[in-house]
Image (tube, rainbow, N blue to C red; front, top):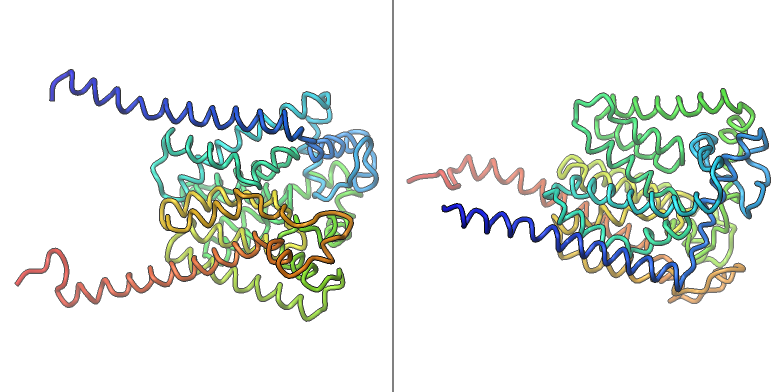
Length: 403
């Protein structure tokens, strides 16, 4: 091949990423125009985070009324320690920084998602995924609220994508659980999949976060882990249609907040079944399927799983595109159509929804059950193929078999 042909090939190879960068840039620009001009983001959660950091600096009650904001602290005290830098900056700067940092975190999440899915990590693949993911309802809502969901997801994905012999495995999951309790179920997932050292590291990291905050504010640390952790009323209205957990859906089904004790067994059954699927999927297909299955199980069984918590749709989209492309369109339909906002919201009107509205109000939960079923079926097929391969080899069937 001559020098000219090589130069042409090099030019073609560099041309694709440039187009992808332009696509991602246009997607981000369009998103910013729509959100700033039409939506006017409130960024209310980042204001609460800043108030938590300020309360910790001023020695105030972390779980009492927070100055200057509507809302209360629902996170472990270690989160307030993480938010202290935000308390040292003006509100306007914190809000702008929240959007910028979350956009950068989205790129990191997309990069780690492609790695998790086993795809080819390149500027093109990461750019396309980021351009698409930006418009997903959980991602957009996280950005509009100034939420930390993308940061937690980035920590978890970084952790799982580490080399299997890395001593840091478990640290990311432990930090995520120390900031927000829900990722703690992934510690159980690590343990059930035989990664005892990583599970111990994750649990130890959580304990370190508790110990550090006990040194800073022992009262807040004690009251959170013994009282506020179990006070689900602090988190918001269970019946809110943005709550996509099993319990939230059941509350809307029965038109009452009083969940019958027997229905808590349903939540327990979902927990056991979901973890069983996650472990089975990990054994046959690895973390690409096992980790999202465990994460979705955690979202299903949590009392409150706001729609913006479901940023796991990003790595799931990457996995489906790489390994089960036929399911990409249903995923886009659920998370990119804002279907959860098609039902009435606010002032407990969700307790009076009709049957169709109740069905729509559980769109993310329905998707989670569907993904768990798909993970189980795909894993079973992989198991069948793996057992069939030795049998074929024993019978002399294969590419190397001769007469």
